[in-house]
Amino acid sequence: METDCKSISNQKNESTSNPSYNWKDVTPEFFDSIKELELGELLHGYFFGLFEAMSAIEIMDPKMDAGMMCNRESKAIKLEDLKLSDLSVSEQISIIDVTLACLVSWLEGHSLAQTVFTNLYFQKPYEIEVVPLKAFCICIYKIIEEIRDFANRAQVFEEEDFQPALYNYHYFNEISVTRVIGMMREVDESISHKLKSNANSDENESYIALNTRIKFVRLFFQILLSFNRRENHSSSMGETQRLLTTCGLLIPSLISTVDKGVPKVGHWCYDLGFDPLINQKLLPPTFPRYTKIKPADEAYVYFDSLLTRLKQICKLTNCTTFISALECFIELGHNNHLCIVSRSIMQTLYFPQPNRVFGTQDFEDCLREWAKAFIAPPSLISRLNILSNSQAKDCVYNFFEHCTRPFAGLIQICGHNKARQRDKLAHLMEDFSALQDESQRVDAFLHSFSSKLDPPREHLASFSTWIIYHTIRIMIMYLLSGFELELYSPHEYQYIYWYLYQFLYGWLVSTLNRADNVLLGSDSLVDSQKNRTKRNKPKKKKPHPYSQEIVMCHAMQSLTGAYFKVYY
View 1 (cartoon, rainbow, N blue to C red):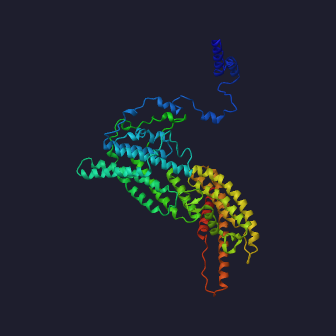
View 2 (cartoon, rainbow, N blue to C red):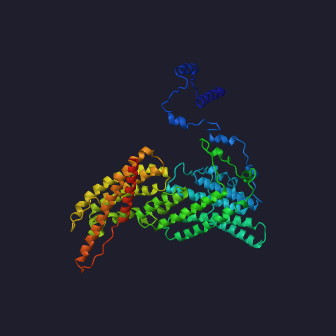
View 3 (cartoon, one colour):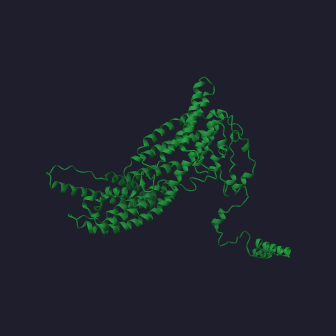
């Protein structure tokens, strides 16, 4: 009885665990159907179009599946055979040089799995018995952490720019930043002490080269930490510039001592502990991508240019107004050599916290000050007291609250690469178009308050002029970016130049003239009120606030007009 019950229960379990399928052989029907297709003709499925066909990957084909490359025989040494002690100074120099070159390749858009983490010493840094190399590996981990933090906060990268994936590697969070810097200082002092004790040794030049690399990595890490502060940067920028200068002075010595490493003969890179295929199984099934690692001297030249760009970015803290910061962003954005580090630091330096300029000033207040300086709307002039009315105050504050996202987006766009800038400028024009409609409604509402002042003040076209100014500039940036990216055909030049000449620069000049006249008129009203109580004194002619920008716009209008007539 028990056996019967067990057999019945086993049958039930098998039936539930192994579902039955009613298979049907469609082979004859399939071959009959394909007779209706011509030679080379394909059946187009609804869910499998041209895009899917072009991006499809044939799994397990070494030419198409990157994961199949790991089945090839590697020339590198095994992980268990890695030399963890008794490394010569020249070997340490070469390992550091190649690792820093891999770091540069990562910053240029390759993955960590195919660049920095091909160094087998990063698999087990705690087991390294050579103190300089151990401290260096842990410090590189921390540098990667800082760079990823910059990139994730700034969000100015795309898939082709930067790959932040860690591939199951971790940061060693148990070691603090202070301890890492302390470890690097201890290595620096240890090598310096060894140099003093062996003043006439033949290895002194190699030890100096190793010490220079340790010092460079430590200073570079400290530079990243100084930029990554969430508080006000203006007070600490002097220290950052000092670190940048000191770090830059080490570059010539680094380049000149590259030959102090091991001779580049045979499979020297594999023998040092680098395996390009060690992480191949961690990569997703994609088309194999050739990862080129720069030579060490070119990598140090890259670091030199990076430090130069960071020095230029430090000037951003001198920009006290929104428009000066925007001009600085646009100027830096024209640099074709901006990497993910400099682009991200540029963003996080201005916005260390969301909508907090330099971490101290609210972005809405910054925009209000810029609108007041641009065209002096009556609602933003405190002595006119328009905002004492609760409805007017709510209207103005809601308008500037809606302005924060598009204007912050304009700042962020300057951090993207050229192609993405153009793509995002097109979307930003839609946001500013909506702002323009809202600004006209706000001006009309506030005009009912300003017209009752003594003397009456006109509020029409105040905020709308301010928004139109930025909208036209975005349109000009969009068209000019097409020339930088070489997107236009020669037959398109004529109407591109025509539109710039006949419309955009003309509109920009008229917008600036209006703002210029409003500011001068506002100043004359203030002067007339002061002269009622004071004696008349000879007046000094006030300069036009936007005269220089108007002249530049006229020059660009004439230049585009000349090009238009050339292609006409």
